[in-house]
Image (tube, rainbow, N blue to C red):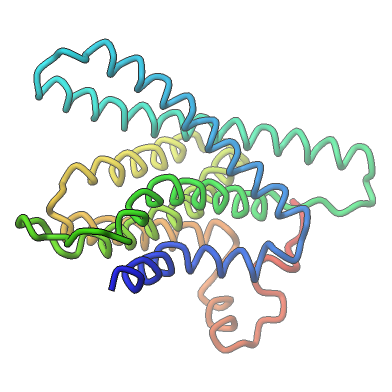
Length: 257
């Protein structure tokens, strides 16, 4: 039973991300490089967040329970802000690299910023999902029985669906974030930051997993619709895609902006 839980939760959490990677990124070496670079930027943001958390936890080591809770909330807020700062830093790096490639070889096609936003967002999401869920997955192999002390027996399943939400949200946030930077709509960056903070702070609603998941999925759907139209999608293109009539759908024939 533990093996079934392990593989089931693994495929729930990482199955869609794996499919996106296989069908849209794996065949293009340049996209793979950009995805790994995005994952690396997220890792650096985690390192910096961990350093700040380590300092804060040692300062408040002998404090009472409520203080420790406030430190935990502070750590989450700081971590989200640092992640978005590194997303902006990665955007600036990609922008400079794209401009440099165009100046060196004007005839060479350069990936569009929309494509780079998608790839970098997936890199952020995969790495975030791995680090947030890998310890939970290892515990699912046992020994022990979840819920034996009155806790929710669906803990692993809820964690898997939450990890899936975070991965997809990072993709949507990346697309919206990069487009806002391109158009210099800075208030949209604030919207991305606030929704990221909202989803992250909802994890403090444990053990109210139902409220947490429903609200997170609502945010994911709204961000997904926004990202779809930001990326150039329309109701017509969606209809053609669902009917398998659009030969130029999504990433394969995007023109550089």
